[in-house]
Image (cartoon, rainbow, N blue to C red; front, side):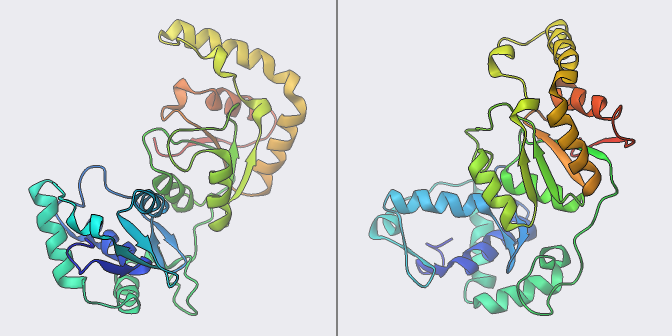
Amino acid sequence: MLQQTGGTASILQMMKWAFLLSCETPSHGGKTFYQFIPYQYGPYSFTLNQETDSLIRNGFLEKELDNRWNLTPLGKSLEITLPNDVSKDICQISEIYGKLSGQTLINLIYDKYDWFTINSDLPGRRKGKRPVAEKSIYTAGYEGKTVDEFLNLLMESGISRLIDVRYNPISRRYGFHKSTLLRLCNSLRIDYQHFPGLGIPGSEREQLGSDQQYTSLFKNYRCSLPSREKDLTNVSRLLKSEPSALMCMEANPEFCHRNVLAQHLTTLIDMPIKHLGC
């Protein structure tokens, strides 16, 4: 995109071009393109921003003090091979929107995409309020999702608190390491809480494959829950105070201990279980 638009753009322009590529072209930027969340000035991708930092470290981009990205000589000369439909769509977006200012792009997107105005920092530009879910024991897994897609799911579902029940909250997937996830949640006014005492150590999850092995693992976990009374009491309190989701990695809750935990919590608080994103 930068090669198509003269080699320089503000971060705001680049985000909006990428968003429009994802929304308004047949290719949507390709199968693995970025997901976007409503942020301070409309659609934003934490993942895209993080990956541009990698391009800067590798000498393809420079970031100016005025929040502009400039292609370096190395970036300008780089030969990029993309699927034909994606290349065609990038050219189309560049031709239509490449000369528009950041403010013009914001106005254009705000007029068309109401959801992406809900967290706007611009006075009077929010077209709606964030949903607020009914109190339930929500659960969510991030497997197969970018952090932007996952956080968008939480906001769309009306969740305002994320309760991380991983024993070891690290991930190779950007955004799901505890410190990063805490920072991103805070920037979106989502409270983040971590309860490692409600997780299952990785050593107990090694070489899981058969239904019998999962059944045995979850049976042992279920039997151990009464001994984790303090954490259970604290999580129950949090679930009752505002819409909250128990989070772990697995996409399918049937293969995740968060489902066993949620079932146990129903014996402590009168709330139904709802799995998000299934």
